[in-house]
Image (cartoon, rainbow, N blue to C red; front, side, top):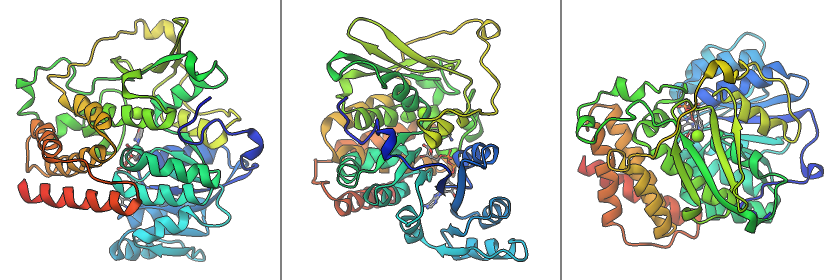
Amino acid sequence: MKTYISLWPAAASLPEFPRSVAILGATGSIGASALKVMDRHRDLFTVTALAGGRNGTRLAELCATFRPPFAAVLTDAARRDFLANLPAGYSPTLLVGPEAYTELAAMDGVDIVLSSIVGAAGFEPTLAAARAGKMIGLANKESLVLGGHIIRSACHESGAVVLPVDSEHNALFQGLQGHGRDEEISRLILTASGGPFRGRSAQSLAGVTRAQALAHPNWSMGAKISIDSATLMNKGLEVIEACHLYGLPVSMVHVVVHPQSIIHSLVEYVDGSQLAHLGTPDMQVPIAHCLCFPRRVEVDVPRLDLASTGSLTFEEPDLEAFPCLRLAREAFDAGPSHPVVLNAANEVAVDAFLDGRIGFTDIAATIGAALDRHAATDVSTPETVLELDREVREKIRHSI
Ligand code: NAD
Ligand code: MG
C-alpha cells in the first residue's frame, strides 16, 4: 500500500498497552469522547497530559477525575481558573501558552498524541508529535490542510504513525486495510450528512441564523466544525485530508450526501466492489479504533439496527448552494499554498459569522475572494505555511 503519510503500521512498531496518552484539546467535543473511551478502558491507558484551551475550570474538572501528571492551558486567565478549581492534594505540572502544546506533543513518555485542537492552531503540535515519532490520533484535519506535505515527511523521517480519527477517514482506513494494491483502488467515496441546510436553495441561505447553522442533524460537535458542516466546507477539508492521508489525487475522492450518517465512507476497487463502513454516528467508535489500534475494544454506543433504521438514502451534493466544497477541491488542485489560504479565510469567516458580523453566504464569498486574490507561494517549510496563514487572516480581518 502506497502511503502518503505513515499509516498501516506493523503491529510491532506500535506502543504496548497500557499506552500513555496526551490529549490536546481535552476540553472539546473530541476530547470528551476520547475520555469516555479511556475511562471505560482504564487498564489500557495512562492519561499523561490533558490540554485545554481557554477553559481552565473544565480542564481542572477533567484533571481531578483522570489525575494526569501534566496539564496545559492557553492563557493566564485559564491558568488562574485551573488552579482555583483543582482538588486539594493534587498539583500537576502546568504548562501555559501555545508552546505548551508542542512541548506536550513531543514529550518523552507519551506514546499517543490525540490531536484534537480545533483549527490551524493544531498544525504545530501535530508536527511536533510527527517529528517526535509519536503515534498520532488525528482529529485536527486542519493541520493536514495546512501542511500535509510537511507532516508526511516528518512522519517518514521519525517513524511517527498517523491514525485518522475523523469518522470518514477512519472508515476509509478500515476499508483500505488489507485489501489489494494501490492500483486496485478506483476511488474513495466520502459520505456527507448534508448538514442542517440540505435541500435549501442558494438564495434561501442568506438569512439563516447562527443557531440554525449550529444545529447539526446527526453529530454533536464543536462550533467551528458545526458551521463547516453547514457550509459543506467540512467535507471540502475532508477531501483534502483524504488526498493527504491516502496519497490520491482529488479526482479520485468523491463525495455523496447521505443524510442518515450511517455509512461513514466507502472504498471502491477496480472490480466495482465498494466496501462501506457502517455504524451509529458516535465519535467514540473511530477514537477507540485509533487509540487501541490494532485491537478492538467495547465502546458504549447503541448498536446499529438496520431494520429499525429502515432506509439509507443518497444524493449528489449541491455545489451551487454549497460552493465551499468546490472551492476546497479547486484549492487542493491549485497547489500547496491555496489550501492554506482556503483554511485561513474559512476560519476568519466562520468566526465572523459566529460573532454576527457577516451572513452565512458571506463565508463562501470571503473564501472565494481570498483564493481569487492569491498567487501561489512557497509553503515548503512550517515557517512559510504559518506566515501565509497569518497574512491571509490579517487581510481578511481588515476587510470584514
Ligand atoms: P471543540 O471546539 O469542541 O474543541 C476544541 C478544543 O481545542 C478545546 O479543547 C479547546 O480548548 C481547544 N482549543 C481551541 N483553540 C485552541 C488554541 N488556539 N490552542 C489550544 N487549544 C485550543 O472542537 P471539536 O469538535 O472537538 O473538534 C476538534 C477537532 O477535531 C477539529 O479539528 C475538528 O475538525 C475535528 N473533528 C471533530 C469531530 C467532532 O465530532 N467533534 C469529528 C471529526 C473531526
Ligand atoms: Mg468527518
